[in-house]
Image 1 (cartoon, rainbow, N blue to C red):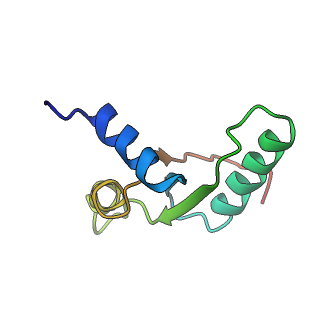
Image 2 (image 1 turned 90 degrees about the horizontal axis):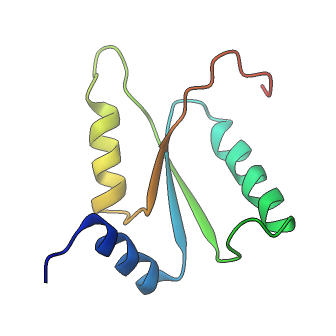
Length: 95
């Protein structure tokens, strides 16, 4: 059987019963903002009611431009994250 990324994601969800969302960004408020959005979506019944674990990692920096890529790989292979988001919040009014 050929294991595709979709199969690995499905297997991860089936094994853990917890959806894992990876966030790659340096903004410390991003995890709080995403959790609030997930909570609101669950209240409005537009989100899976399964537990969702948010795992944050730092992104690329000027002296280490590949850091974001290595963090994404770590989230996928070691933390078994189902989805990875990279945020670009320019002039974010929420802060």
